[in-house]
Length: 501
Image 1 (cartoon, rainbow, N blue to C red):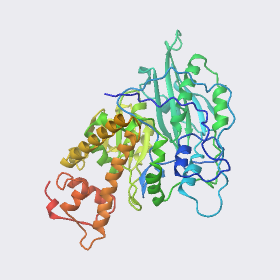
Image 2: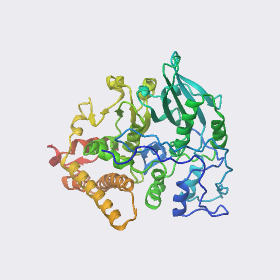
Image 3: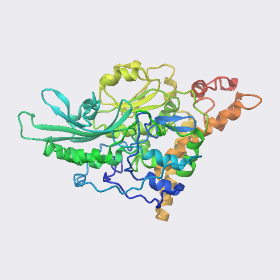
């Protein structure tokens, strides 16, 4: 079913020299894309208030303290490359030029995006091990005073003993984490024939975490073969650690709504460009097929979505990311009152109390007990089966004629893209761009039409206006009513022609 690996590409954690011109001049748009595609090594400060290109789509689209952007692929178990990493070699000096100090006056979007990314650094590195007597344990960490309570159950997912390798994205307080797990057979009665460890990192944002995956994979193999060898991890932390000012000054926590639209148009959603390997959305959509349209509606309605799958969990974390991408909006002012669509990535029973307080989220788990906690979620996804116990949402699980038509168009666009690439021999655009922009434009189309109806002399949603949104006047009636209520358009009148479904 999947044509390529769901693994992140093997990128060395060491910096790639920036293409930035000397002198710290403000980069242009194309220049910004180059900068955004490589990690930074500045000692710029960052804090919990800046989780990155965010949680989800809010006013004007994804804002830095909202949507998901750090993962990819779905449909097949991840594979581990045997290519050795070189991260345990001596660290190179910083290769990246630092931006010049900001000057008073208006700061361009590109400057703000680049400056923000330089604050995306590592706040902790740790090693978790499985002890046959005590279970999961935190073996080592830096800094020593970091609150890592519970991280041992996130870095080694429940059921991981069944797989040899895995990777896990998770949330820990106001930070995001990535851990690489490995399971090695050993001739040890005390360890019951198997040694299991995980090496992970925490950051204020998930947007650059995958760039360190090859380093973490290599380090967890070293920890299995030579336990207690922490010097490469210490050097890594000293080179990458973030300096978090308690005041939070000079930390960019959000881009203005209109600026996000500019980033989409001019820089091609840079947060998505730098946060997942190729194949993410295309594999996600091939995995779910037409059901992707059901997930799209539920994501746009900001429902609580929980995805269950047995290990390996890395590929399922990518599905969490892709679900959040379905709800992107870039129209200024839209979604001011809607709940934040929070990606929690991997969750376990220790996260139950946190999820109880969430109005909207998307997460994944390997623990089947969550299915019984029906008050924690609105939608439960088991493999390719999307279900809900909420009577008001059950009709949304049925595909409308418009859903099937949109999926057909999406499939046709993909085939045309692949054909043009084959004919020209050039990669003019990626499938990721195609899928992400397809849903972005669909969402914008809906809210642009609703705004026009709201500003008209007769603010009534008619069959014509529903079709203009790309929806089915009858099959999508309930979805539209939910949408009007959640996004604050409930003052609009709905034509009686839409009463029958």
